[in-house]
Image 1 (cartoon, rainbow, N blue to C red):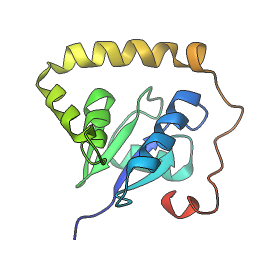
Image 2 (image 1 turned 120 degrees about the vertical axis):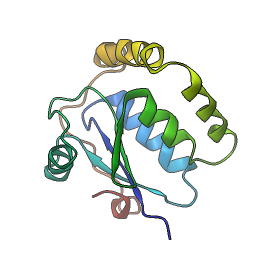
Image 3 (image 1 turned 120 degrees about the horizontal axis):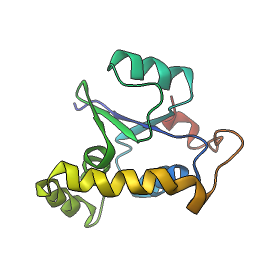
Length: 131
């Protein structure tokens, strides 16, 4: 049986919260668990995988390996329903090109999408998906 993958996300970022909602709606098999980067669990996982505590990226932890930026996003899409797994083909694009675009969006995400004062609180039915 495959383990759950963990997605760490910026809990105060509206774009990141939208990404989590997007995943939840399409993750039919409930493959993913979630934690905000700001949470104690998120900070502990960053330490465990020797990642900076000041990350500006989503993090995917799968099979004891951490992925960041576009590599994380594309691997997440590969586990969703419908045609989203086809996006994995973008991994053939050199990472420095993919991550250039990713970093540009990450730098501007608060300006374009806004920011919350605190991390989102999952609904009772989603709470079991959050660490």
